[in-house]
Image (tube, rainbow, N blue to C red; front, side):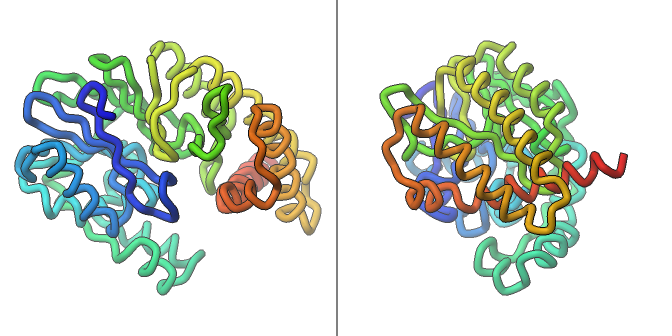
Length: 310
């Protein structure tokens, strides 16, 4: 169901209902928020058709941040949108203009073949089409103001978008992960996402407080979809950030700390999901959260090592 001209697009990354992008429509003009990978471009264009918009009626692609599950298809999508401009955090702009460093960094971890298969080759965006969006930058979508908020914690180049017209926010990864498979009678279940390499718990706490202060009626997450109960979920996220940091400190410098921390995070999320009324078992939890648990462990340990150096 579409509310306030906001369309949810499943980008098809990893599995159904894992990775979302959004299309905001106002007075016959459109803005995308995030875009998934290169392989999501046909889905993005199909969303336009379903909304009765032509490609030249899209004015903006707004990126919450430049991680590839959010922005990997930006260059390919922009090539299909003749009048659109791309708005991105000032720290992320250069990576959209020249994605070579993004590609090299990820390829060093995953390998070229996996990168090609998972994301597709990254395409640059012409610099004249890239708009840097610092804190409180307002994007005008046919008279509908979309305010960009500098919201670090998950990444230093992270924006959230506040749509005052609908009293909604688009949170990228700042407001955590909430997969619909964990929904119960108590509502959505949410966990933080740390992700290597820029996790900062203090900054993430501050960003969450900033979002809650806007009193949004709902928040649109990339992973996945819209959630309400914003204050409750924010409280859950604050507690879980602190619990995850405590587990990382406990793992310390032990040689098998990555495996230990992943197991501890699995137990933490299983305990919290059960308290939320979720009836799944450990195997189901690992199937749904396995990649996120691994990334969270990596992000926490990178942060821990950074703390030790200072």
